[in-house]
Image 1 (cartoon, helix red, strand yellow):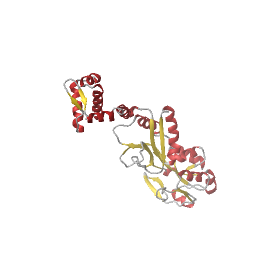
Image 2 (spheres, helix red, strand yellow):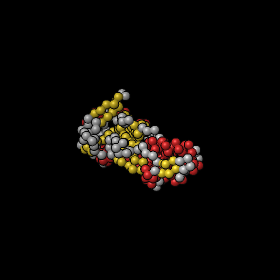
Image 3 (cartoon, rainbow, N blue to C red):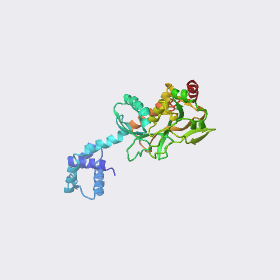
Image 4 (cartoon, rainbow, N blue to C red):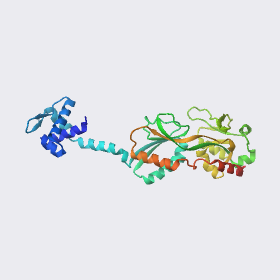
Length: 315
């Protein structure tokens, strides 16, 4: 039964002291009011009214219920109405999860642009590497760099993340340019250490359409990809840097892309959110805005033809 509707009918009948008057106030029939009250009594297992053919009066149990719910009914109805209208709201909080570099470089500018259009929508941005438990952390939407999420979520690939071998112009001028992956063993190289396991990431290359993984010794290994990139820019060695971090320095001439014929484009940036029947309007707006802005974007990757051109210029 609809408990809120039944309680509302009960309160109106108690206030007016008559099922007929309650029916008039609600635009229903006395029979409908009587039926609703009777169902509520059966549901609660108590008698709420003493009834006669002409009027009704509260029982002791009915009086206690009336006093308990009368002041709270309007607030409860308003709260339920607010929850029902959440799919249409253009205000409220959205909790977002992402890795550190994705959050700083991709999401912060995106959120700024979105908030200009929807100033009543607020964000709580949680930055951590790895896949966040969207249920326990109450995450509305997450972003993952790498392979597609395997959890029971809806996931959309936004753009390709390249793994770009690169070095500073100064390093190449001093140490020369590798022509194939095996040449990297003769160079000073950097590495990225997985924050969760502490193990260095293998370098990856695309060879005849297959992804090949290689171990490359590192003179510097960091658990922060931006720190590794800064070391490469400073001329410490050659690194394999993801395109979210590397695209802007390559275009600025701070890094030179290398081994572009073996470029790996296996990974992507994915947006994901929980499967549910109704999505709040504010979340739907943000998802649509994100897809429109980031789908197949080249702001955070570099087309292969451009990489080859910049490689020739730099070497």
